Amino acid sequence: MPTAKFTKFISFLQEDLAISKDGIELALRNLQQNSPDLLPMVLWQYGLVKLSQLEQIFNWLDASI
Image: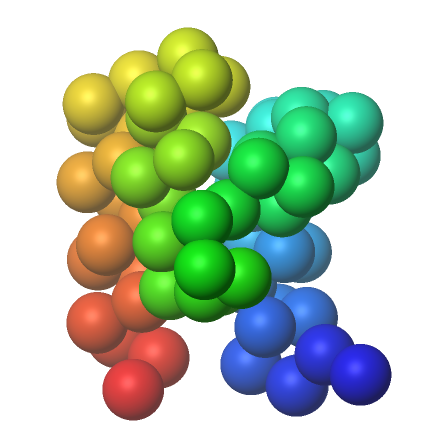
């Protein structure tokens, strides 16, 4: 079961960065070692986010600690 923080993170990706649910699901299926911490990098690797969006993701993650 996803944690509340992870659920908020997915909402941020969909609502603020307009990443599709299908894109997020693709990235989640392809995570190595089943580590959700790598999700931002997998999204970038698959071309689902630009570098500027990746920076926004990291800023959001830093602020949510």
